[in-house]
Amino acid sequence: MSFTFPDFTEPVALDGGGRWTATFDSYDQHHDDIYYVLVVRRQGRSYLVGSDHGYDGRRKVQVGLSWAGDDRTGPAFVAGLRQELHLLATRG
Image 1: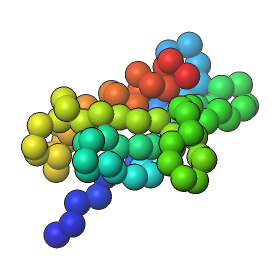
Image 2 (image 1 turned 30 degrees about the horizontal axis):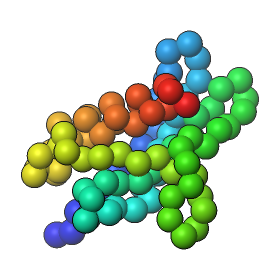
Image 3 (image 1 turned 45 degrees about the vertical axis):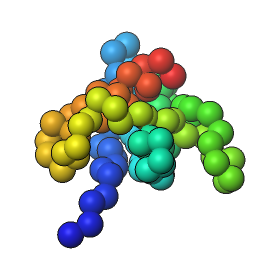
Image 4 (image 1 turned 90 degrees about the vertical axis):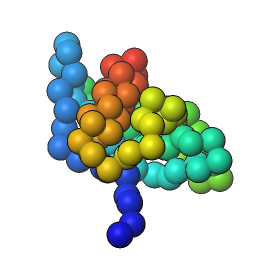
């Protein structure tokens, strides 16, 4: 069974209005970082959050996984990852 990092396709509400979604892009095993395409929608407009990473020049956010420990298969990991992405979306 292979592991895949989750996508967050159901919009998550932000305080003060707006919502975010995130799609898994890639995993840097050497640095234990993952990259997501994070989209924030506010007042009918969409914004990509993050900076350019990698060869494709797409805007992505980087999430370090030092907080996650070794077990990334359970609900605690998904909840922690969701929280990390939420913080990045809030900062915009």
